[in-house]
Image (tube, rainbow, N blue to C red; front, side, top):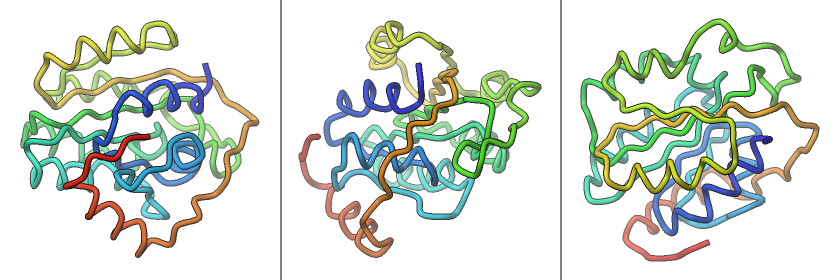
Length: 188
């Protein structure tokens, strides 16, 4: 399964839940597949989707907040895993799409082949799931509805030549749409 396929399978099931998506191809895939005001697309700020997602989860404890992250992004900000694990937001669901490379910048290898991101998350008080199979995504998502966060789902995905369109929204518009969406019920 490639990242875009996994994002498509997950995003459409989340309704109007806030999604903070990492910069690069993750935001581009989400934008192309399921653009909605409750998506906060990172434009730049590599590695910070987890920190921003944590802040949103803490300020909106009644909303489940999803973070769509990449292996390269989370490896740039591993400290966020320990901060999230310390704060223990019950409404935070962190999804890491791990293809072993920095695909958005040319395919340079990341360290996720040698470092177990899910093991670090587990040691940081996350409840952890891992899969590489599309057919297992829905059962995992169903199971996590009954579990309090923080939750991390590591999805091993394959590299792909499929490149999605760039996000057309300017950062100011992304922020405004997102803030307004926190009180709406729009769906993809």
